[in-house]
Image (cartoon, rainbow, N blue to C red; front, side, top):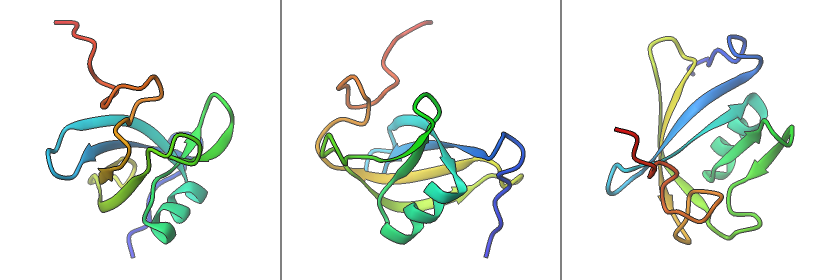
Amino acid sequence: MIKLDFDKQAGLIPAIILEHETKDVLMLAYLSEESYQKTLGMRQMWYYSRSRDELWHKGATSEHFQHVKSIKTDCDYDTLLIEVEQVGGSACHIGARPCFFNQIL
């Protein structure tokens, strides 16, 4: 079993979330050890909201669930790359399919 390093960033691990089929980057979010364990157990995404200081189950209020297809970690065990099946259309809290759509350069 891989032991993730939750100690480096105040108990949180960043996770890059990809759409499984297209490999589009949907969002970046953070997981606590508790949300990580819930994600593993349910095979649906659970995150830790830094702004609300609480766990949140993606889709619980919006019905835009994320079903986990694969989870990988980097070489330092402190960042996750998670592929999901995005259900309900929107990964972004403002209603966009991906969160990354604002062109800078």
